[in-house]
Amino acid sequence: MKVLAFAASNSENSINQKLAAYTANLIPGAEIELLDINDYEMPIYSIQREVELGKPQQALDFYEKITEANAIVVSFAEHNGSYTAAYKNLFDWTSRIDMKVYQDTPMLMLATSPGPSGAASVLASAIGSASYFAADVKGSLSVPNFFDVFDIVSNKMIDENVQNSLISLVAKLTD
Image (tube, rainbow, N blue to C red; front, side, top):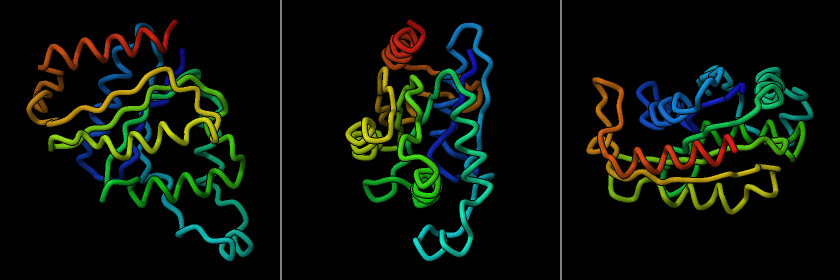
């Protein structure tokens, strides 16, 4: 199974990237490709820019990565209760290639934050709009207080409840 994992964040030290990678690595026998959305940076989307530029290669490349995947693990960072500007822009450009961005690929949607909300607002938004973009969401999880439940040094989940939840999600993805 080829699994595409990424954080919807452009932070160099993204805790969402850590969560996506950790979760993807729980999938038995998976071939994991960990994307950094910084590699897909483009001008801010607008109709005028699309007319001028066409579809940027970065958007085409991102769409192709989704096409090649058998499963997706994405973890959403939250900026002011919503998507990060970096992810939203990548998504907007990619949706101009095909509104069915996720191409019915089975996926897990995650979110985390250092605080008690666990980026729950952006995760709810992503789940709520998933069907419009052909996202076959098999499960989701918001992880609050990331630094209390995940050991950055050992790169391991230290909270048994969160670990068990992730294992259950992975099982739904691989069924």
